Length: 251
Image 1 (cartoon, helix red, strand yellow):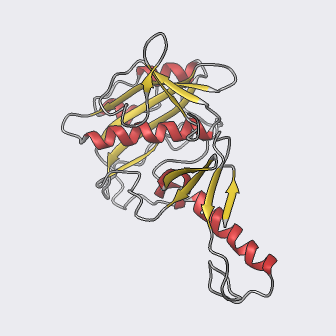
Image 2 (cartoon, helix red, strand yellow):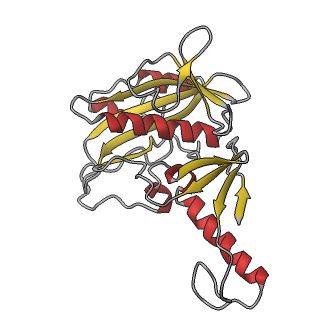
Image 3 (spheres, one colour):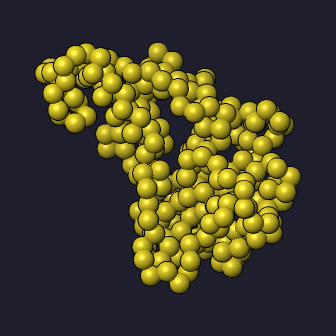
C-alpha cells in the first residue's frame, strides 16, 4: 500500500510503499503487536523517524498518480563522498572551534546533510560576522550578509571536507526570497573552491532547492549559468535566466 503525506511546506504530495503485514508484529521493531491500530502506529513512528533523518532528500523519486513516490533503495548519498554540507549557522554557535580535537558530533538531522529548521534569532551575531570562517577561506560572503540585513535570506549552505577537524571549507550556496509570500526563491550564488569536484557544487544547489521547497517555495529562479544546473532540472525562463519548479509532479 501507499502511505501518502505532506512534508513541511513542500508543495509536493509524497508517498512511500509499505508492505502489508504477514505476521502480528511491528515492521519497525519486530516486536509483537496486538491490533491493526498498534501496527499502523508503529509504521507512523518509523516514517516520522525517517523524515527527520532526511527521507525526502535522500530518496529516489518516481511520479505515480500525481504523487512523488520515495524509494531509499540504492539511493545515492546526498553529500558527495568525502564532503559534508550543512546550513551556515546564524545563531549563537556560528562555527565549530578550530582548536577542538574532537570529531564534529552529528545528529540524525545533520546526517541528511543540511540542518532542518531555522536557527533562533536570539543572540545572533551581527550580519558582518556571520560566515567569517568562509571569508577566511577566501569566499565572498557579501551577498548573504546583505540578504540577512534585508531579511531576504532563504538559505545559506556551506560545504566542507568531511574529517575530524571539519576543515577546510570548500564551497557555499545562497538563495533569497523574491516575494513576500516566500513562493519564489532566487539562487544568488553557488561557489566551490578550485580543485573541488563539481559534484559538491551540484549537491549544494540540490540541497538549496530542498531547503526553499520545504519552506514553501513553488519555484527557484537564477541568472547563474553554472554547469550542471540543467541536469538538476533548471530550464530557460521567459525573459532570461533559468527556473526550476519545486513540484516534482508539475509538467
